[in-house]
Structure formats: C-alpha cells, structure tokens
Amino acid sequence: MDEIVLQTGAWMRLRGPAAETVVVCVNGGQAAEVEGTWSASLEWLVDRLAPRFPELRFAEVRYRVKSWRQLESCVEDARAAIVEAGGSNTWLMGFSMGGAVAISTADEPSVGGVLGLAPWIPDRVSVEPIRGKRLEVLHGSLDRYLPGIPGVSPVLSRRGFERCLAAGATGSYTLLPGAVHGMAVRAPWGRPVALPRAHAWLNWVAAQLDALTG
View (cartoon, rainbow, N blue to C red):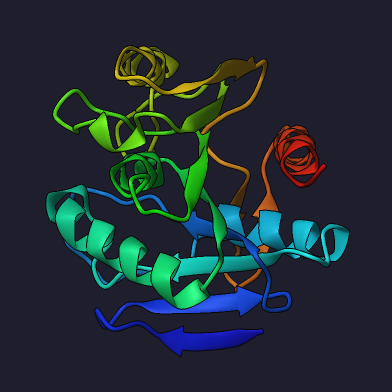
C-alpha cells in the first residue's frame, strides 16, 4: 500500500496495480472543521475488496479538512486524487458526505459513475456534474442523525437521488434493512471494527464492481 501527498496537500493511499479501472473512495465529514482522517468504513471495505478484485486499483482519500463547511476543499482533494490515480475508467465510492463530494466530481472525464453509500446529498449541492453518469445508492434503513451520533436520513438521500435522475443520471436506489450509518468504526487500538450488516454492504459493493468489470 502506497501513501501519496496530492497536489492539494491531501493524502491518498493506493492498493492494487496500476490499472485502467480505479475506485476512488471519498470519506464523510462533520460540521467541525477538523483535520482529515482515513475512513474506518471505507478502509474496512477496501481491506476486503482489494484481494477480491486484484485487477482493480483502490484509492482512499484523506481530506485536508473533513467538514461539510469546507466542501469545496474536499471536492478539490477528490479531483486531485482522480487525476493522480491515473485510471481511464474511474468509479467514485462516496460514503456519507463523500456522496456529495463524489457527485460534485463526477464530471471528470474518466468518471463512469458513483457508488453512494449512505450518501449525503443536500438540496444545496448541485447534481449537474453527474448528468449522463450512473449513480448506484445503498442506504441503511435505520440510518438517521441523533444528537452526538452521525447519520444521514434515507429520506434525504432518496430526495437527492431523485434530483440526480431528473438531471439526467441513471441508476438505482436500494434500502438495506436493519443497517445503520456506515460499515465500521475505528477501535481504540486503530483497526476498523464492523457494524451490524457490514457484510451486506460489502456484498452489495462487490456485486456492483462485478457488474462494472464484467
């Protein structure tokens, strides 16, 4: 696994060989403007997807600042990662706020579409960049914001998904029964620990990548 500093000052880590098809993974965020971290949920997924798809390159992005108040900065980091990863067929996998980041960068020439995992797609975010691209969404049925606990309501992501379709995207929306916000959390010792239904998220993503790669 290689870690690279992007032109923006953000970080990216790469797994897999140089390849035409690249999956660029973009993280969630929060209100507070804090230094970026690696996503436990995306790390847990990539740890399992990379051996399963050895022909693909996976690129995880660590923003400079992981906050929706700095969304444009996160979008700049994602665009830099798409260019640096070097794929001719790029798919963006956006978790939580990463859904908005992925949709905002879907107009990059190499991007074929977005896999949205519990994606945050607020009304204020333009969905024009995903016109003509695919958007596949999976959202946990029990996901919601609670005081002190991050979450995104499926009602919000469904509304954003419908806006994307109206803008000219294609795709599907799937609700995962019994799932909460995310696939894993970071344990005190540093490793991701799976949340309920984590393997159902994994199987859905793997099926999407199977379809993309034939």
